[in-house]
Image 1 (cartoon, rainbow, N blue to C red):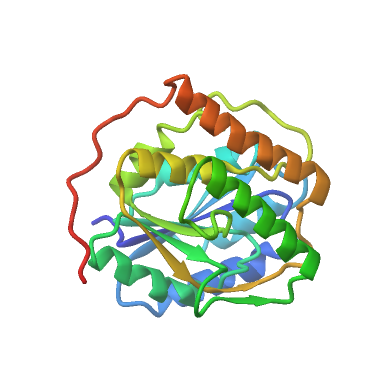
Image 2 (spheres, rainbow, N blue to C red; image 1 turned 120 degrees about the horizontal axis):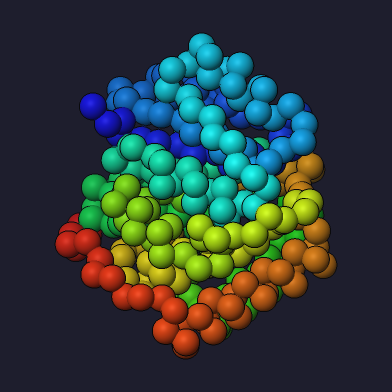
Length: 262
């Protein structure tokens, strides 16, 4: 039988923290009353990331490891989301900045008829731990740009803790253009705004999105370059809007809708 939950973990040169992250995920899932799977998608790492994941997978049959060329996080997440077998598919960052037990906050959204539940570092109940003020300020500027150009009403598009009904994930990640099947090989860490495109398409296809405040901890080993990645993310947002204006996003019928509970 298919598992209830698939957890996708994209990883690029994560040898220092992947073991602890996977141990935490597997421990959490082992304590749950439902079946699950974990999919680690390696983004062409040059360290021992793959070996760590495969060694752990040898003793955990529900853990799969996928090797990709280095094409960036968007392509890496897409790979895992399309291979997942769970009724619900969650992707989480390799640093586990949002603890796995925050899944309990996202899960009720699906019972209420939502198609997508996204962790948010904004809003009542959200907690941001250890984040430098300048990083928070930069994030709010970027979110303002996103809301103005592409996604009004969503306070945090970039939190790496997002869950989808499997059919919805299949539809959306097969429809992306920026980092889809033809994504090019890249050099170095590539932080992108792939999340914006996925959520933009979700809105376009009329899927229901629930933004859920979560606890998030800033990682001192973040791969984000404030200048380079801010420009790349801004460019991605413009490309999403330009693709839409050119009609590059084919409008496929969304799944039958459920009415969220009051």
